[in-house]
Image: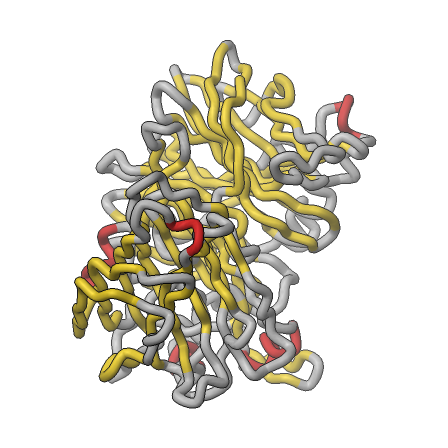
Length: 505
């Protein structure tokens, strides 16, 4: 069945709520479409929601529009994995109920184990309220709670100043008590994270704002006007709040983190910063796994026009699973989950090379647009005048390429997309993240390139994510770059990556 929107035919899920079996095959020829990042068979995806492990399997829910590659009529999509890498599409989990509190859409939220009953808390619109749904058949189908909405409005002191922005419940349990965070805003003040508590998930007591922004301050990072998708991560001696920053209607900035301590239900902040740079990664949600790790997924937004998404038939990608930790220096640690290594195939290896500005050719015999790359670079005792890194998605004639490098003079990790595409309509802004190398510290890069997705991790704590849309089919070469003086390449490992989807039979 097809749905015609603005002259384009897009995939539409059939009435029985099953994704079309041939949807992935129909879009498989799109070389911008990732193969080892999760995304729905077709149409729209945004925020990860409801991450939970149940009976040994990981369930990933996400915001989805099954009727087209645009934000609207938001449902909850559902995927299940045995290994955090390969995913099985399940039927839609939450569907707006005509005439119900979620009749206009089921927006972001979380999932918890409530005494053996899987329970989803989510945002219903419009107006924005908190609703519950439960499952009695192993998370296959979900039933709305009869007392929905369980939180019908912002607390009275904030109701008028919130402008109706009041969403994205995140819940955890401690000492038999449930705690809930909600993102909110206060006109003229900034973003807020609100704290509630309950003993049964139904009757909630509002406590106070756990963290407040300042819309007037831009030091060190502007915290915007509205906070979305809050997460609470408990590392024992310290806790971390993660939230996403909105500057205005549909102007999404980046996720922020604040480390600190929770004392007497008050959060005492310590360090704050941008969690993932690049302007593409948004609305992350965490999952505490059975082996004690904290994993995180985020929504990778498109960097092309709505018309291009409509023509392609899909929009939005999930990040790879990222291990979130707390480093000894108090900063969040970020690294790709080791489970991704099972996708490695053909391997190229090099090392102990001196990169010089005079010699930066393409790497012979290495091509690909679905790659994992690890590189270790030694800038010597003083990297201030040096620049070095990698060239990706290069065309042989040099018309298209993306450069990933460390700029020692500015102490920045950079993704330069100025020549990433011949298409003038896609986002080609340069993205950068601050990265200060200590004296003698080497640069360790870990890249995941998958069609239009590029995730870059550096030195265990800095992460950049961007979208790339080369137009030339031959833009699949790689190279090295250096400027300002020689830099030693200690090691370079490149793997072709397999698809997470089974081949059609």
